Length: 249
Image (cartoon, rainbow, N blue to C red):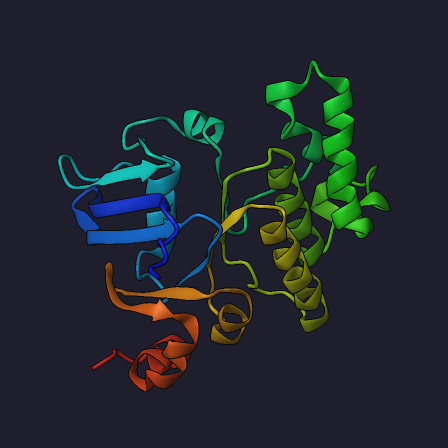
């Protein structure tokens, strides 16, 4: 009896991308199956965040170099807000909050597509606060006064209000205390259980192994590994390049 593999929700094909004269992605291809948890790891400056920007529409591939397919549609040239409308959202690393707005105002921003439906807005807001009870205690507080972990929770909660099909998170665990990471790990399990596919840029291999099933390892704008996340533990050359900045041989 044969089993059918989950269809790809996201397909990146042969994408190259440059900032001016500096090329940062070189014919990168990636698949994210529906319902999967994918980690994107690699050295600093490898191109991980740039790839997420291309997927989200915040940066464009080099002309005639690659395509981005999402949920069966070619979105290569769609603007970011239209991609969000298709269910593709990015939580950007280190800049995912509006610091002068309150927590509640930040969360309500995600409900702009259905603001006229007050019942749905309150339902989605209540669901987000149920997942992150600490945010309920901070609703009237300015987002810029939250701890780093609380801001990360708020950014993810805001994204979930929009009920994305694919949630991309850049630098999930960066700078978070271990006790906060335990809450984040619980959060990830619940996000996937609710039907959201996950693509995470992560610096910690331990965190990646704990929350994802498949990993891509990027170095100098190219993939050097694709396979089960635990398989990276056996690749000492790649692990050293992450933790000690060595060039993989």
